[in-house]
Image 1 (cartoon, rainbow, N blue to C red):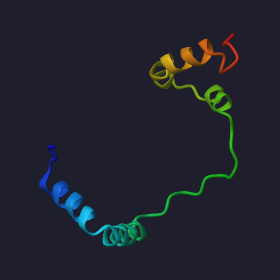
Image 2: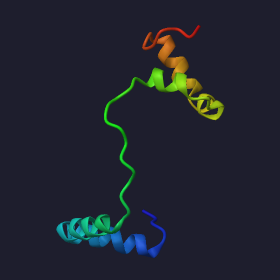
Image 3: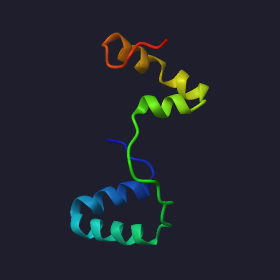
Length: 79
């Protein structure tokens, strides 16, 4: 196993030896991080979000997944 940098090796070993202490330290660090902006509650189907977005790069990156979904009848065929 090759882990780089050395600080990652130390962190991995510390986590293995002291899992509870690691969880405590990480929760303290989490408290120091800035809070994220609140998102509106609720869900939307992916197809609805995809229809609202004009993102050619996203469409190119997800081409194979969308083609597989159509092939296996997971989504209505595109028109």
